[in-house]
Image 1: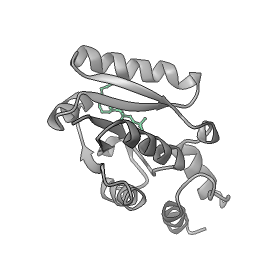
Image 2: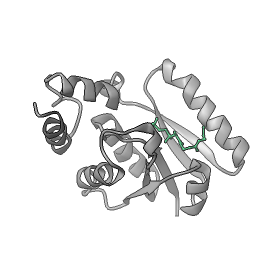
Image 3: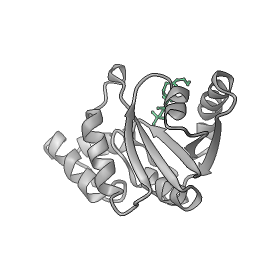
Length: 159
Ligand code: PNS
């Protein structure tokens, strides 16, 4: 069984994340979306809300599981009995941070490897932060997030 962990904040999930999940499903038998449950990050949506949105938009992918985690990513990966972490690379600007994460994780646990997938060009500019900003200011976010996420953002910002 080839299992991979796709970790992140997903506050909220975007079409860029969804594209990576879909492509990961074509490579791995099971993809566990690990939702960081970290109150210090002050997310817009609670972990439960973020997970509910991810579950809804991945409901047609039977090999996807959505699980919350706290603490070290390497501990979560081990708990899931996995050895592979997937991260998306949008542009070269992501590389420094992503290398830092991947290298730190390898020092913490040498049996865990990070695999980078290049983000679909259509979503190379996308981030949850930008999407929230556009939504908050009443802009159209249809091209950035699944429909149910668009609705949730509009409800939160009352736009
Ligand atoms: O979507 P994000 O915010 O870029 O995801 C970052 C995430 C969740 C992958 C990263 O912050 C993480 O792994 N956090 C768990 C804590 C941890 O393991 N830290 C050590 C590695 S630097």
